[in-house]
Amino acid sequence: MKQVTIYTDGACSGNPGPGGWGAILKYRDIERELSGGEAQTTNNRMELLGVISALQALKEPCIVELWSDSKYVIDALSKGWAQGWRKKGWIKSDKKPALNVDLWEILLPLTEKHEMHYHWVKGHADNPYNNRCDALAVQAREKFA
Image 1 (tube, one colour):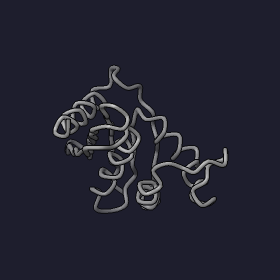
Image 2 (spheres, rainbow, N blue to C red):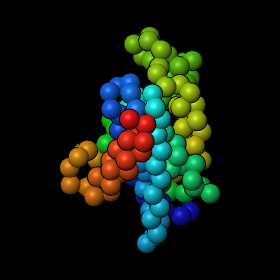
Image 3 (cartoon, rainbow, N blue to C red):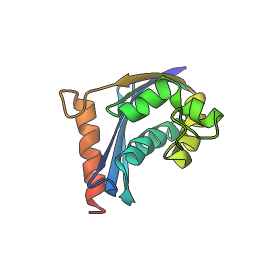
Image 4 (cartoon, one colour):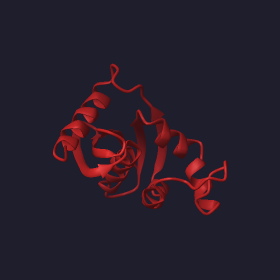
């Protein structure tokens, strides 16, 4: 299987408010940038859409190294929380309904197609790919501000 590295980030002005997401896919020496946004959304929705859009861009099953500064996304996937929410009818362990179910229902099947490895990266720090994703997300968000 091909090994692909994906970096994603989301941005929101107000929460909710106008938002954007950015993603970079790296395969060998090839890099592809993706971005998008919405007029009325939340930061977590933009974080999820960045990952969804990046995984949807893959044409075949891959070994994916996913890097994100979103603890929400990385923890929910790597610790199995989102899979547990789905099993329990989208109810969290605190008995409250899970948020962003529409996006999790898209994301979970996408992750199941690939061999996923999850990595949290500190946002707005010294990772150039995370910083570039942030810039893409902010640029996309500005179209809706």
